[in-house]
Length: 436
Image 1 (cartoon, rainbow, N blue to C red):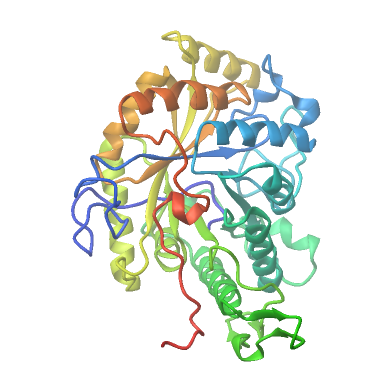
Image 2 (cartoon, helix red, strand yellow; image 1 turned 135 degrees about the vertical axis):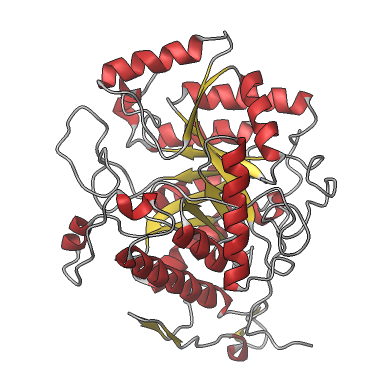
């Protein structure tokens, strides 16, 4: 979870459990150092693409950004490419050029639809791909968040994920009138050692929100619904539990109103750039997306994530942590064409694209080279942010994916129907279930 636009990971040196990176357990289909393991790929979908001028590009569909058909086209294309999951951005305020404060610009996309509701709409028209909406955890009630994501897991039959996000803009609190939150600055997320106390407090609260949600997901044991018409017994009340969670700023009695889901616990995905978000990921996440800018930086970030895992006491054997790296990508088959396309977009926008994540321009084969090089440091996969939509998404699914398949490092069919299954993560038992 994070309210910033990125977060980091571990190193290619052995982690706390003796495996490479921060994943905890080696991929069952790969070699001991992950070199033979299949690569995992996700896509981050946002508006018309991650370039602020993408909506003005030929082939863009700016008039359809609030149309469910547009999003259905994107997600079904991602599923055709056999990707592990897609993420959907969301926020409590209009988009802005800076993550931490609103702006008055009118030359960039503004306005969006609710990410959880969008994912729920897409669930019945997809069959395999994971659906991971973003939600704010600073101003949204944990109970509502938990049942919303649990409902998505039921609707998708086990393909739900959740990206919790803290409030990075003080102005968001005015929508609710309950509390004030600190105004963060760019320095709050760029200094990994001197990260601000307000940011630490927001992340600590976020970790409590995720823990409360996880307890609510566990509050119904498997088999709590009997549905026996002969005896008239629908529910085994002994298998439904109050959680009595007490956090720093809230409490939740429980139980959930939503029975235990196909995955038991939907996947929690976080984005992290610095020490505090790494520790959040180690405490709360199943997948962490980090933002290195080269191979050496990837190894350094993975080492930091491994350190966070040790400090928080997480047992990676019991709870593996998958590590993904984020990249903004512009892809074209002709060498040099993607760089020219990005330069044209920069000119339209009036400024060169800047991002927390590395920006790649090149061919699908060149991107495949980079992914496999960085993957050797211990990464499990990548979350790619298409610079423009739908162009760079189809370049991923119809250019990059076949290239990776030719190299024998990416699936040629889905082997699982759940998001946990795609990532090789076991379905957890309810913490309230009686052992034996």
